[in-house]
Amino acid sequence: MKFKDLLDLPDISESDRVIDCIDLKERLPSTPTDVIEQFYSDHGKNPDYQDDYQHIDISNLIWEKVSFSAERLSIASIK
Image (cartoon, rainbow, N blue to C red; front, side, top):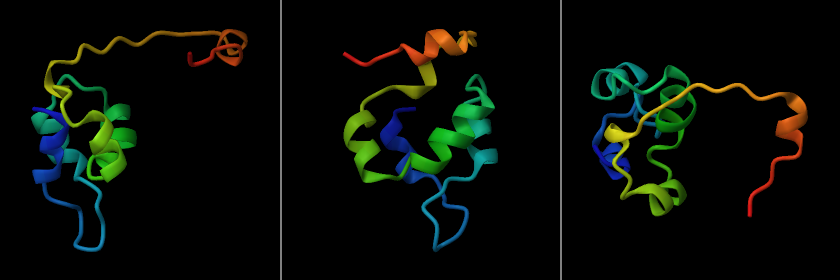
């Protein structure tokens, strides 16, 4: 499943553009719940996110939980 395929999934309600988490968990069983709830469900139908991520195959991503100290996170930057 590519990120753009999230556009085809049903919304929770007609006034929302939020994807049902239960449906996402069934389609992406190896995806962490936090990612499903906080990213795919909330932002999967957002045009800006679709522009950036539409071609990524999200069903083949490998997720790994890591821990970092607050100090290490505070000095993180994007280059």
